[in-house]
Amino acid sequence: MSHRLISATLFMALAFAPVASLGQSQPKGQARVQAGQWAKGDVRPAAARTPDKILAQNLAQAPAQPRGQTRIQGRVVAEPEAPLPAPTGLQIDLRNQMRQFIQSITAFARRYNRNFSIITHGALELLIKRDVVDYNRNSSIITHGALELLIKRDVVDETRFAAARTYMKTIDGVMIDGLFFGDRVFGEPIADDIRARNLRLTGIAKNNGLPVLVMDYGTDHKTIDESYRLNREKGFVSITVHAPLAELGSLPPYPKRPFGEDSKSSLSLKDVATFAYITNSAAYGRQSEFAMKMHGTNYDLMIVDVLHGRKPLSKRAVQTLKYKKIGGRRMVFATANIGAAASYRYYWKSTWREGSPDWIRSPMRDDPDSHYVQFWRPEWQRIISGDTKSYIYGLVALGFDGVVLEGMEDAYRFFETGGEEEEETPAAPVAAQAPAPAPAAQ
Image 1 (cartoon, rainbow, N blue to C red):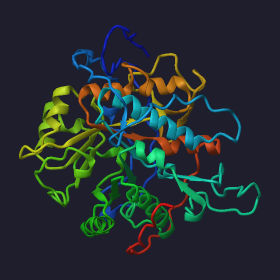
Image 2: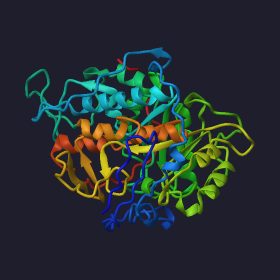
Image 3: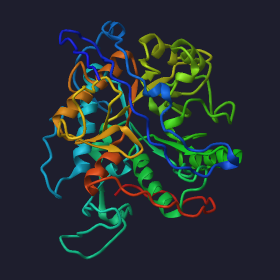
């Protein structure tokens, strides 16, 4: 694997240096499908596994927006200090380390674009601080210093947590997969206890002024209609997609026009009533063809991978994506995994492997080309948002309006439990029911 050195004098956003060919991903297991229309396979199409190429000429011309004061929801705040390396042992507050990491990403991005938006994908647990600390998959320990109670780790007890309000003031929205219909048993309703937990957490987000974006899964028209109805009742913005997240290479075939679409401009997340998520755009052909195809829709928000096949999207393609079919503006976000390092990304060096450097840990079970990282380490955080060669700076310079941060929950749970958790057998499908109202944050 070769790694191209990046000149420190280049004021560019994102250098995508070529790397060697990658190994094949281990196949994932099969999942039941609605009407036999889809089955799980390799999680990343071949085009998305090919090496990145340098497009510095596109990025070097991207002038940084003037540096200024950091603002969070319209207020000037002091920039948080970079998190220190976490100590070893079970007393690490990994979730707070992740909160601090996300806050530092926000502060960095807004030096260059004060309106740059941050959405967190998953990791809703970061919205609360609990006095119950759990590092075991099945049970947690310690309430007020005593072994008084064993509880399910993910139970949210409104009497035992405080909302992480400072953290919530830093981000601009949250996204959750499978709130009502999931992909583990594709298109089937989520179990009552899991749904109730997630509704409490999304309710906390909404009650604290954060837009909630929901991605449900299914191909049956009745499922899609029901998902939209349930999410609309809660005030959430939703889409029901027809394949797992890693395989989303096209827009949903139903409905032909998204529920609630309009041609009005959407200049902030508060304006967003519809969104689309494309994780692999290579099937659309050239960048210009992909951008024009998306331009022919009226989604308020487009979420895409910065890579189109082997190359990052150009500034021109990003700018084209920002316009709806009838001319209204929309927001365009990229994605960034901040919990795992991928050997097909520009930052990966030929000498890197598990344990070298020591903050690179085990490969992921379903994606061996990606490795868990000690996300609290300064070395990794500099790659994500440390300087003008970092990932986030590249997204800002390309003209993206924001970023969807991914990989947080998998990362902190990996280190909390000492490894990847075993997948549980999905519960038997249950009938969809209208959930109870989410409580206000305490």
